[in-house]
Image 1 (cartoon, rainbow, N blue to C red):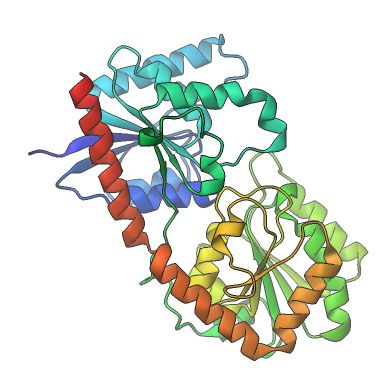
Image 2 (tube, helix red, strand yellow):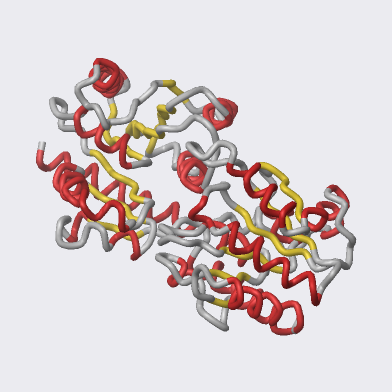
Length: 384
């Protein structure tokens, strides 16, 4: 039996966050005897380049916002996708984001190729008035794969249980080895080998809670004057200039000499292995929280807010510490607890590593995704 073609749609072209990294994990670990991947990216960037290097067929196609669906550019993109589906003899379309899921539904109307929507975002309060979109997706997609129970909640009541799957993102335990030289990253950014090093990793945008951590870090320095804060990540799409705003906050609070903005780093094992603790102070519901499992894989203790999937990933006082959102004082107390008690920090880190091995290994995610593909393609063939 020859391999069937799976067409992946990603609205971005650069590796900017967990969604693109998850897509890379899936595409590069497909069983080549069963699946042949073809990827469509929104522009030609680091994601497209990485895929080509790995031998994956990549097309570049701009898929404009659907705020104005009658625009000619939208119609043209749908037509090009429809042509591509036929040209590549696609058996399944895997949509990596909501917008491209809507494009996929329109592009497969005549061919009836099944669409799988990989849902990564929870139901933010500002989206409540647009639940019709979730209902539409649940009705017209052959399957909805949610990256957490928190995300799956969006679709319960809309989607038939047999078509709704919860599949946590995975991390490569071989890549995230616990053995790294902690001094390499520290010396690169001028941080003393014995200085307490706190990190926040992710796109720079308001919902991530950087401002709360910067405020809390001023108090941390009073007890730990050698401490250093590493802010890892680039400005999120649509929030260009936000990093500069955060830099101004650090200057205003008089802590800029203790804060380093690294920009995007493609060295997460080294980053997590170099930190004394990782902070995830999100202000909104998180769809998943890849940074939590990557920290856990490196036995790096985590302080996080219990929003969305973070409640599923962090077991309070077992694999990390949970604190209320928008509460700098609570954040300070949790950070101090781990810095004051290295033994507690090590215990949390060891438990986190064990939890990742059991529930969030990439091999587990890949095997389950193969099963879902087989089920969805098989069901579509029966209907056809």
